[in-house]
Image (cartoon, rainbow, N blue to C red; front, side, top):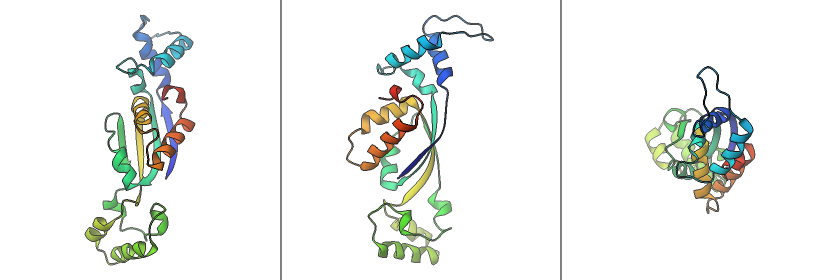
Length: 181
């Protein structure tokens, strides 16, 4: 599994929105708020859930993730606050030779050879049907902090090692990890 954070945005805007709930008056052309105070408040409210941390929905992150299909099936549980684009098997599976490195670590070489034979013989339907859950698919993922927080809470100590890696990488690469724990 590989993860790379591409971008992150919306933190200051989310704090401005948070300040609206705390009686900050502003003209649409001139909104002034106490950034330090809202930063401190955000660290308290992020842990309260139940709508108190809705400002987290406005902080966006983008990741490129290469992971096995069995992990993506669990990741796809998260539909709200997530947008994904993938290297679709429909459009990419037949374009390049299949190698052992296209799969998670536990695949037999004869399985890869069998699948590559199907690809060379242009047997897309059979290849797609026989594709193991260990096939690595790459997706661009856009996810907000609130959804990341939910993922971390639900998948911490999960038996799939990929979740531990995902959580660790997210917490190491985002700008405000303290809002997610």
